[in-house]
Picture 1 (spheres, rainbow, N blue to C red):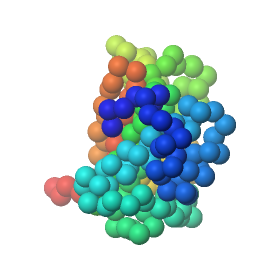
Picture 2 (cartoon, helix red, strand yellow; picture 1 turned 45 degrees about the vertical axis):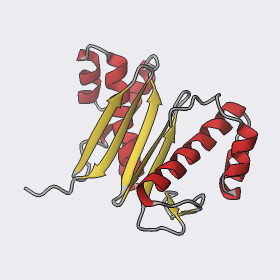
Picture 3 (tube, rainbow, N blue to C red; picture 1 turned 180 degrees about the vertical axis):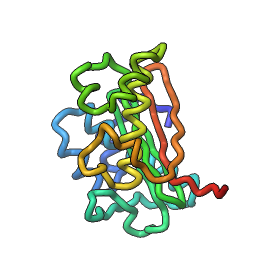
Length: 187
């Protein structure tokens, strides 16, 4: 979607989304967060229309790991994410995970908590340490959204012990986005 988060009529958009998503969006206290929630849903709805010809607003069910699924279309997989200035959506016939994060100053305490020593070295030696950090972070988050497995809480070594997956990372002026899929290529 090319729309800016502030460029759509929130009240009108809330009336156009499913009652389920409207209720979810209105749980957010701040209007900006409501807009991000609605924008992510609208992006999903647009992708479902474009890729599968589905016109009605989708309804979700939540599995035991907290992952949302399309109630009427269990064969279609999706993942949503948002950061301060953008939303992201991935839709596929196969499981998929996506994460988008705003490029920001890296908090060293956070970096040492969520990155392994080798990842910290990769970040430190990168030309753009912020991009390197958020590339690795979005890889971890998209992997978690794909598998639902948090590696027993060991986020530092999550990428060391992952199933065969493929990552596609895109860097934008103010954010980094990564899509994660299972590697279905055969050798």
